[in-house]
Amino acid sequence: MRGVALYPTRGSVVNFLPTTTGTDVQEQQPRIAVLPVGSFEQHGRYLPLVTDTAIACVITQEIAGRYPVHLLPPITMSCSHEHAAFPGTVSISAKTLYAVIDDIRASLARSGIHRLVIVNGHGGNYVLSNVVQEANVDGPAVSLFPLGADWDRARDHAGLVSDRHADMHAGEIETSILLHSAPELVRAGFADADHDGSNRPFLLVQGMSAYTESGVIGFPSHATAAKGKAVLASLADSFAGHWEILGLSD
Image (cartoon, rainbow, N blue to C red; front, side, top):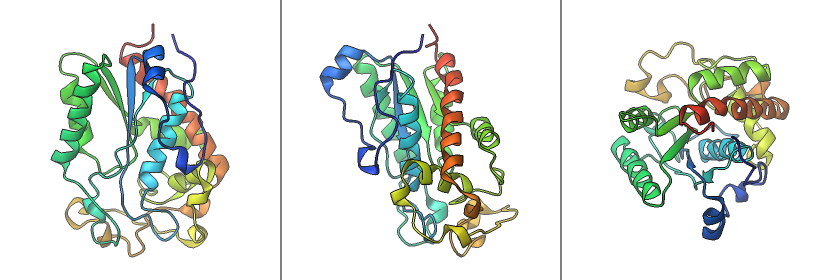
């Protein structure tokens, strides 16, 4: 059975960190932790380097507004090597990200929390799929959210113009989410920053710079706060499946 909301669902960027106390957690006894994983990478001239982290945190807050979860602070740097040609981007290795999450899982287990949802804000964190697969060999323990189908449902629900392939980076969906949840992070310039990256067969080899000079692959000109609100509402609805698959529906 779903519990009461333990955290606010909205707030400024300074409130992206959870403010619960140890006493709060002791009283609430959450059975599942939610870990936002972002990145520190370029998002064109109008979105900040922390965009993926901010979006991951916004999604976790939407989840925490509906479910009794232990909300963790974000991992703010991850695997952004495809953005290395652009100033400001900082990456860590896949093995480091794996190790950090493995350590977090072990620490949570020692405190009695044996279920974890990783909320991934950066598509380049391919290693997270391996983390989840390995963790679930002996039964459901970890889920990765949102999955591709979750994003696709959210796009349809919000009436986005672009699809997931065309709107890869700093486009309609990311700009819309921030226009709704943290408009103070969005600078002028997104209305004329559209870029069609077309097919990107060697993205893993050549990185983003082979397909965009601006750092944008997508259509931010179509972004609105209303679309961002609808995307987040759909994602919060989709989380029900992840909650249930981890055996938390009772």
